[in-house]
Image 1 (cartoon, helix red, strand yellow):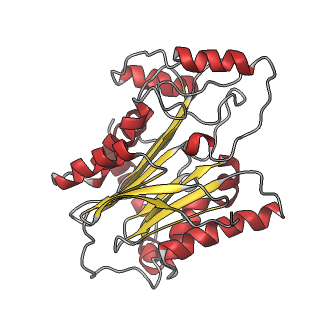
Image 2: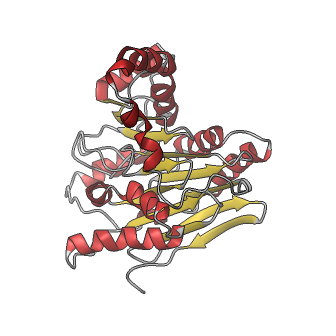
Amino acid sequence: MQRRNFLKKSTAATAGLISGPILASPQNITGPTTEKNHKPAKPIVICTWNFLNASSKAWEVLKEGGSSLDAVTQGVMVEENDTSNQTVGVGGRPDRDGNVSLDACIMDKDGNCGAVLALQNIANPILVARKVMEETPHVMLAGKGAEQFAYEMGFKKTNLLTEKSKQEWLEWKKTSQYKPIINIENHDTIGMLAIDKKGDISGACTTSGMGYKMAGRVGDSPIIGAGLFVDNEIGGATATGMGEEVVRTVGSFLIVELMRQGKSPQEACEEGVKRIMAKNKGRDDFQIGFIAINKKGETGSYCIHPGFTFRSYSEEGHVNNPSESYIKS
């Protein structure tokens, strides 16, 4: 059953139980900075890290008049299919037991969202997450349930562990040291936000998670509100880095709400990082990077340690943007 039909039946069954004032209440909480009459922003895509090919693919979709949802889907898939990228999709580093598990989420202009957690044996988790969003009444599917759903949707079983990642895992097992590396290979999760020619915003996020993590570990990337959040009236945000710290502050949702209150994307990203640092009381042995975009197409980014960058592609060009950082080099 498609989500739309499920929700329509659910709404019809319960509408009589809800009073008029309650039904009207969402109109009163959109906030003073909601801009309904501004001129739509020109198409733009931004993504965490220097993912040139992914942002190029997303821009290709936008340039041809495609939707922001299709743009972010096809954009992040580039990295899911790149076996040389050991932090996303096929070829990702396995957990400490040698199994590659993938996480992804997606969110569209209407607030619809879907996610898969700890998904094994499926090459493109972002496509499965989109199927969860479009074909089920749910938001998240995890583990074996997500894998079974993928097979039912026609996805093929795929060996995600490349020989390179396998050999590195076997070498790691000799010491089994488990310490996240700041700016590992200068990239990890890919989070992407896009605005299409209609002015609509969508976002996607996908990762294989921390290399050699505990089996079943899930970070922020597939968690709506943590690794990704989009409000089409305000903007969107996505995160990269140590997922546990992003989850603790519901980082991407926080940044969008700060933009709702009037902060620029840059100001909101800075505040998001500062909240994390305040909670950690001086601990700084990890990296977090946020990127954000508002309805006007203005962008921002901020991180803890120097080294984080984000790609932007618009009519103004294709640029790898160094991010300002909380800790200066």
